[in-house]
Length: 199
Image 1 (spheres, rainbow, N blue to C red):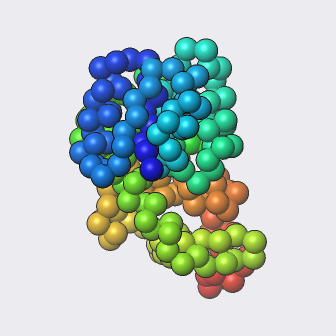
Image 2: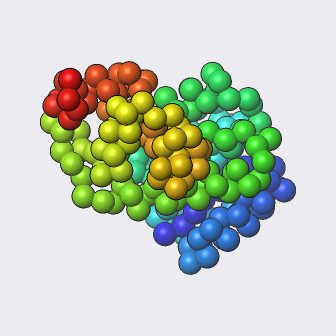
Image 3: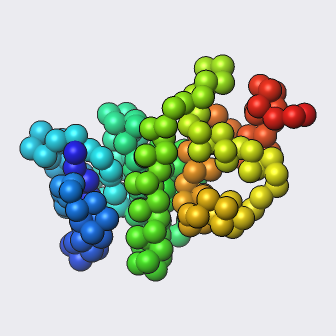
């Protein structure tokens, strides 16, 4: 399993590569300058465990790289690292399938915590899934729905679970996408309509 970093800015690419080597010393980190190099890198370095992609890569239009990568490896977490401020760009990336959007101006410790959180989450998602109709949720996702029902804020959830607020946001984004909803309110409506919560 390998961790792939694709960014045309050499210093940033190297910095993220160093961070990943520190977080996952047993995994191979593959640093690429161009998105077009990715297919050959898979053949040489093996299955992906994580993707970190720059949004504005040469020869790539909009979120097409995210869609292509997620089409090939839908279960592999994908982090977008971009110079563009969040907002519409972040929403477009998450809609395309990204698991996390981080601005390049974000403090390095926050970037580290966010990526560490998403790597840790993969272990959570490997837990026994709870089937709700055609949707399968991990125990952590079911736990998160119950916390939303209690009216807990992201900060409250982070404190209770012992994780960062950034990681809570990632959990929420992935939960929303799993359920096909876009908000806490829609999540709770989904859960209540399927008997997960007391109405």
